[in-house]
Length: 51
Image (cartoon, rainbow, N blue to C red; front, side, top):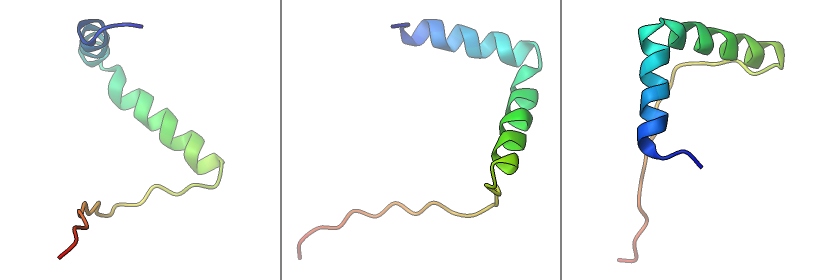
C-alpha cells in the first residue's frame, strides 16, 4: 500500500504533465456513455443529533 507521499508525488507528476484535466475528461466521457450525466449541484453535510 503506497503512503501519502507516494500518492502526492504521483498526483504532482500528473499535474505537471497536464494530465489531470485529460483524465477527468475521459472519466466524464465514460460516465456519460454508461448513462450517468454529471451535473452541477451541491453537497450538504448535516449531523443529526438528539435534542
